[in-house]
Structure formats: structure tokens, C-alpha cells
Length: 208
Image 1: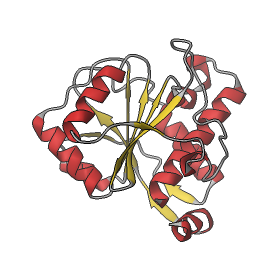
Image 2: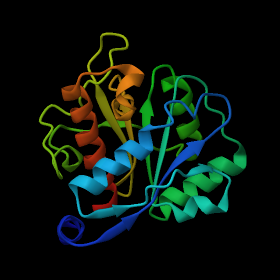
Image 3: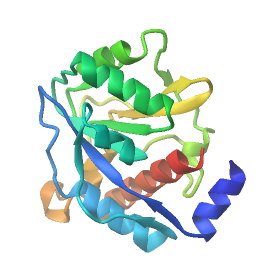
């Protein structure tokens, strides 16, 4: 896997990121975040990331065209039986899901993920995990981008046969830091942390 990481950093690699559209909540909030993250990936690494905006439902066969999918929101998430089965198949076949709680989706997200992997539990990733060190170093885990309930930021993972298939950030809200500067009016140093962590997540997903 380290050889693949070197290939990504020094060679050429194509990736397309899609945002997950789901029922029950505001999957669409902050529409600028993916395009801004993609811009930073393309500017800072040799990864060739598709700059187009893609949205996919979990029941769509096109889901399998995207190696990396992103999900966020503030509230409820409702997945149908077909969506549950399709997402499970996607993850087992090598896909990667990054989910970022934008405040209020934790209960629903955990509930729906339990339908996908009934026998798996989210575990907090140790700060030594490669996702925090594969490009930029985050010695204290995920950065705090937005304050929610005055709790420390957490990064959780679902592992299937020792492979991280879902990475989930809670009380961190990394993706808000990718939005256009005028949306949340975050200081530049905060947005920089968010972009750096986002780049780490994408590189890790492609390398491991």
C-alpha cells in the first residue's frame, strides 16, 4: 500500500468524488464544498481529481463509478432496502464513504449504517492512524472547524476485514471549512486545516 501511496503522490492518478443524495435531510447544503476541495487537491498534489460536480443516489448503478463518495447533513437520513444493499455492495467491492456530521445527523447516520453492517461498530481511530499522517500531519486527530456542543472532535471508522470502509467525523465539521469564504466566514487558518484534512482523507481512501 505504501507503493500505491508513492504512486499517487509522485505519479498520476484519476479520481472522481460524488456527493450522496438521500431522503430525509439536507444532503445538498453548502454546494461549493466539493468543488473547492477538488481545486485544492489538484493544486497541491499530483492527483487528477475531476472538477465536475457529481451527485449520486445510493440506489443508482452509477454509484460504482465513484471510488469516493461523500455524505453530510444536519438531520435525518432515510435509506431504503435497495440503498442499504447497494451501499453495502459498494463498500465491500472497494468503495469508500466519508461522512461529516454538519450537526444533528449522528443518530440517524449511525442507525442507517447499522442496517448496512449489523455486526460492525464504529471505533474511534487512534491519532497514530495513517489517515492523520498520509500527507499532512494531524497529531491530535481531526481538526475542530466548527463548534457544536463544546465537545472534542472525533474521527470514527467502520472496518471490514481490517479495511477502513467508512470514515466519519463528529463534532469537527471539516466540510464546512471547504465552503466559499463568505459562507461561514471562517478564518483562513481554520479553512486551511479543513482542506488539509480533506486531502488526507482522499489520499488515504485511494492508497489503502
